[in-house]
Length: 111
Length: 114
Image 1 (tube, rainbow over the protein chains, first blue to last red):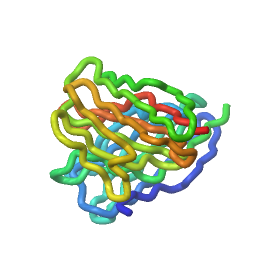
Image 2: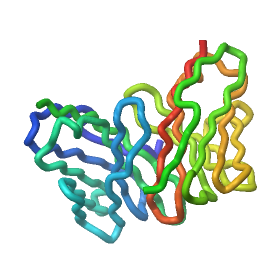
Image 3: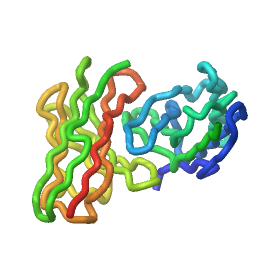
């Protein structure tokens, strides 16, 4: 399977703490994206990082990419209860349009 | 952001019947749409890539005669689960690309086959 791996599978933290999720993938990529999914719902795009970028920020989100290690991390700072959701990384390979999703991290932020 | 609408959100059907799920891009034209399947607490698995005006490209292991995909217009793709069985019960999600790298997802369809 080309599917990426994410860790941890589940993460439980308190409001105000930071949450870090990691993603590893197997093939060369054009870009890597992070998505959020609330239970039983569709996915919402959070951030995209290109293969020639190493770090990107968007609000409370910080994404890093290490193509030599084929890995990425998503940091959510000052977490809120509303951040409770599943987070998936997804990779797009050069020349292909389809996204290959990681296994996901279930984040629980307690008030 | 762009809007992708998926209908129905939930459907319950009897074994042996067929179910059609629609995916519409409401405010943009999507030459390519994607269909995913998701089991509880698991990731999304790509089933097929739907191209407007041509046959869909199915991923390995996905039965094309079981999961019929039609992309008749630039704003509509349909997935029909034929002769549904309980093991087909799952969460099906479509997505569409507007032209850039970002994909926009529908709300998903919870299919229960009884």
